[in-house]
Image 1 (spheres, rainbow, N blue to C red):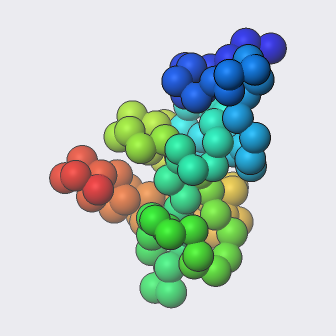
Image 2: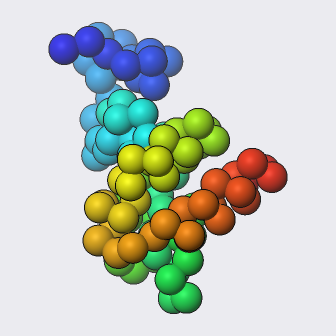
Length: 102
């Protein structure tokens, strides 16, 4: 198994990958430590919300902090599957806000 580009700058001196919870980006599908990805949850008004502090209730989907990964996740329908709720319009609104500077 090769190390992804997301892990290259976080190698432990012993040569092992850093410990901690790993997650997969919903867009590019690369694995990375959870603290390197944005957590997205469904808010109280059925909108997608970026959970910066990782404390909001409910299921979360993780995505790299790049507009390209957000767009790929929307196109593949990954948010709907991961969050187990229809999110089509909400996902497009999240992409629009990311384009403005998240």
